[in-house]
Amino acid sequence: MKIIDVIPHAISVPLETPFYFAQGWVHNRSSMIIEIVTDEGVVGFGEALCHGLQSPHIAAAFIEHTFKPLLLGRSPFDVEVLWEEMYNVTRPYGQGGSAVNAISGVDIALWDVIGKALNKPIHSLIGGAFRKEVTPYATGFYRVADAKYPEAAIEEAHRYVDGGFEAFKLKIGFGVDEDIAFIRSIREAVGNDVKIMADANGAYNAAAARRIIKETEEFNLYFLEELLAPEDIAGYQEIKSLSKTYIAAGEQLFGKMGYRPWLEQRALDVIQPDLCSSGGITECKKIAAMAQANHTMMIPHVWGSGIGIAASLQFIASLPSSPLSLNPIEPMLEFDQSSHPFRKDLICDGIKMENGKVQISTKPGIGVDVNTDIIKQYKVN
Image 1 (cartoon, rainbow, N blue to C red):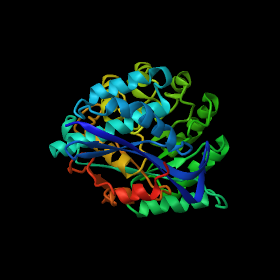
Image 2: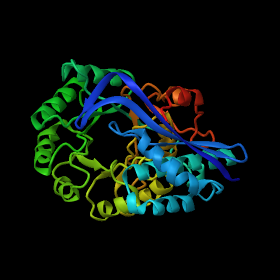
Image 3: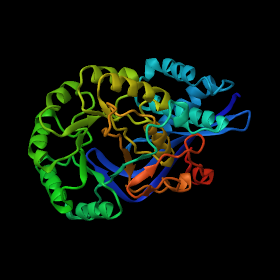
């Protein structure tokens, strides 16, 4: 089997109602979908993550001009060889950011091809499934113009709880006092039986983060995410042990090289690589092994389209708990509920929560069918 085409599909759709978070306004939901075609008719799909303020054209350029020439004529089964070659060729101008985003998407598409060729789900090809289902937590609570807070967020929280979610993640990063009051309001509204996490998207320095950690400890947050900038490893070491609340980060770290100092220095309680950004399945399995060796929990970051969610479920299935036990602390699925015009339609609504759980698909490859009409409808390159 040989690769005969590599097609980067840049997708971007304007939002009817733009929303904002700690780093700015999101006016479009975008994604970079990679399609790999083989000479035996097997086609695989992957996704390179587009953060809220990120254009899909950047990763598309890496694939079209750098990776496609390297991949054509090669065997998709040489997936690790291809990963290392893609990383190496972009070393002088990559090592992170959109370069590794693009590698991630290609890698996922290669594994989708392999799974379909062998009629196996990806998790069965990377060590098997430690679990058949996973507990999701709802990500949302982005803010919109003209809404009143915390009232609008309290309504949103009740929708998630009424819809069966046992956990959700707030957006914070709007000011220390504002965040503390906001977290207090949500906890009082939903009670103590719901797991609450909060994500500041790198809005604070260590001194400000210390206040948030100390003054929200009574509200029993499960974890606080990205309190600090992704470069501030010393700051994370400073704040990690200030309270019982887990400190989490890592969506803006890339590959095993990027994660190495964070794990060696035990800077985080929970690492959060994004499969569609931190290196794809090939590299994230290595990051997972490093996390296990350093006794650190992993709860992957997930914020892509349905393709990214499906691939992440396959990856999460393969993650051992850290450590294994009779009643281990299990990884969770970040299940984005924010406004997204094509998240579900792209995979024919193939991932759903039932009874508070999301099942791990046993269909070949990433485990879902991709609706190529949606790609054609929203493609912008």
